[in-house]
Amino acid sequence: MMMSLGVVDREFHVFRGLPDADGEHIGEVKSFTVPVQPGWVVLDALLYLQAHNAPDLAIRWNCKAAKCGSCAAEINGLPSLMCKTRLDHMPLDKPVLVRPMRTFPLIKDLVTDVSWNYEVNKRITPFTPYNDDQSTWRYFQEDADRVQEFRKCIECFLCQNSCHVIRHHRKFNHFAGPRFLVRLASLEMHPLDVADRIPFTKEEAGIGLCNITKCCTERCPEGIRITDNAIIPLKERVVDRYYDPITMLLHKIGIK
Image 1: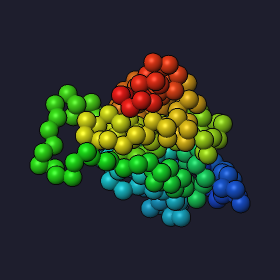
Image 2: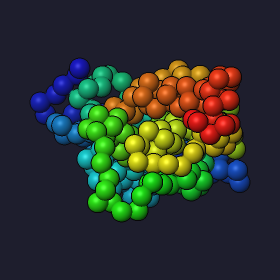
Image 3: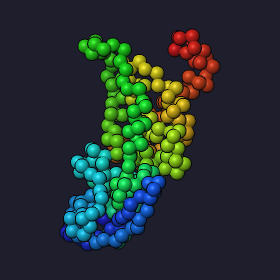
Image 4: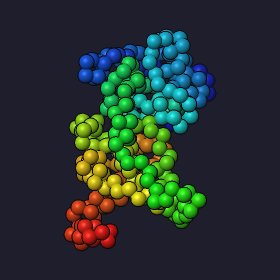
């Protein structure tokens, strides 16, 4: 950890650019020097740049409290929230490199078009309870605890940006990505939900493409155990339904 008690001039390398016709990132990294105050995060430095050096710098942010997910970017090569990345935790003798999320089409500078994620979300069957009368809803605390973790997601899409299936292999049409496997898990594991999303999980969400490298889990700012608690249980349900002969038979005759 590198700490300072006073104002320190620090070098920042910030991507500036516009997309080409396909949304690819076209531009260059420009250098700036920022007088960093004690306790600043990367977002503070970029807002200083916006106010003093580059008024046309495009940044997406909202809460500055690591709860809206808006300021997701890549800092020194790692998908991160700009408002949660402290500068006093970074070496003073090296520049801070800030680039937009590589996985998604560029809009301008550090702002990317994440609308594909919302289109994926629309295809997922929403919460479908067995009874519309909410006064009769009863379930155990451990059932609530199991799905509560998934509700912490702030939709920063850092997990989507980290996933090699989308980032490198560009399987946008075949894979929903870790964020929406988390949503599927939260619905499938809900004790009051009756909808069947396992066929969607296998065919449209493409869960078989995930090889559980845990890169998504490592970058989650909310600490959601995406791989262990969402993706692997969903994979087990898909295997039970489509590849276990006894379970397949029971499902066909309506027992399971």
